[in-house]
Image 1 (cartoon, rainbow, N blue to C red):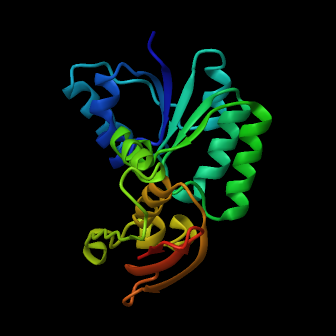
Image 2: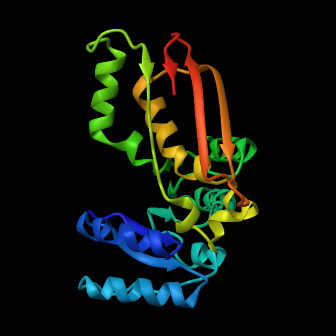
Image 3: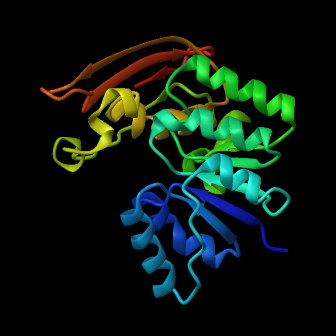
Length: 232
């Protein structure tokens, strides 16, 4: 049985996810995209893959009303400042939510979504491919059971050319993005490390550098886990 999905946001990331969604049997019933240009590009991409483009309802509240009982889940792929209200509305409408990362803009919004998840009994999953990867989960089992020996240090590195890649996009507007490179791309690294080690941080420190932009494009993190292992 196919999962009946609404896609909230039909920009570039939604088009990136399209192929695997269609290949794995997702039934995309409707999209919610306020930009006519983005919807047209998404519809063209669907057509190129031999499928019929789903209709667009740019008003989320109306979409949830019109499709009540006709959906199982939503995939939210929108700018970060929209995540909290959209995810909350969808869970309160009885839908499970797959939410693009970073989850929300701040800790208060994160706690609010967790409360909504618990209250509604819906599933809320943040789309971290590291933490959701079977390979990473297997590696986590090996590390946490001591099969590889005592964990002493964890080192990770992620690089992207942010200074050129995100110029003139919403990702460099703090009020929309919530942060820069560490908040956006660095979230993947932190999630993967937390999944691998399976323990809390006892101490953590971070440094960022905006390099003349409105958000950070360079970042470094150091920490010590509860077990004493060091993280850089």
